[in-house]
Image 1 (cartoon, rainbow, N blue to C red):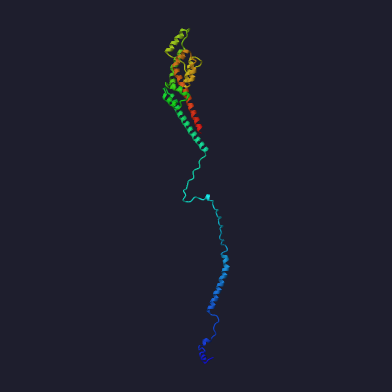
Image 2 (image 1 turned 45 degrees about the vertical axis):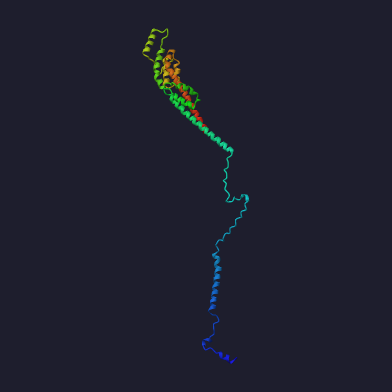
Length: 290
């Protein structure tokens, strides 16, 4: 050792510097505390983590969709710039079209028949109503002939419509006068009659007397009374039957009344037959359209 170096090494003058120094400082203990905290945190995570995530459902993993196989070139849609052609509607089978056409034609024909039958029934009703009056009815007969010219009763009704016939009420009102004449004619004495019978007949021509009401027997007065009741009841055919049993002189006296009454009865018969035919045709047309 040189003298110069001995001179530089000197003892410290501060007594505190002679105390023994601590082996571990503040930095060391801070590091130790941090490590302890980390260990405790790891233990807490290891203990609490299973409890926190125990009931959470696992995420679903969806299976991928199968890939669509490639479409053939013929099935691929046309390019967007190609014109779109609308598909033509499917044509109905020819058989169905024919059946439908036949059905429509049948319905139209049925409607025409029904309308014609209804018009004929109305015209017939108008003719029957007009025939019940006292005057002629040629216009109603012509109207029905224009609609239904083939009705068998129409020809006879057209002939009778030119003159018409008295109404039944008129016939009933005029019957007593002709009946009195017939009763008087029935008393006409024969060639071998006595003077008394001839005087009685002469008086009956001045004062016409006849029995009315219920008269028994088959004499002239009884037949005339029955005919009168039949006329009042509207039964002309029954009245004609009773008048046919009168003697010739009495029938001759009743002839003017009977001619008018027979014309009324003839009109009524043809009118009733015509009305029944028109209603039957209308009913048949209705059943055909059902």
